[in-house]
Length: 77
Image (cartoon, rainbow, N blue to C red; front, side, top):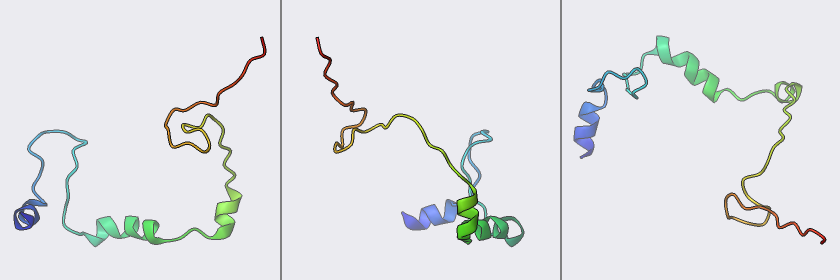
């Protein structure tokens, strides 16, 4: 139930895994900086200064919803 989950939200994982997801109560000295970074929008000049070149294959053929589709190529024989 929701009450049980809420009561156990901050319990530590029962396994010793450094990558296990765990939650902690809000701590401004820990969380405020990350929160501000996520909520602050970049200024347009910051976005334009970073040129991103993307190249590679598409996973979906244009006009298709089928993943890993390829364009049919006809070869003259």
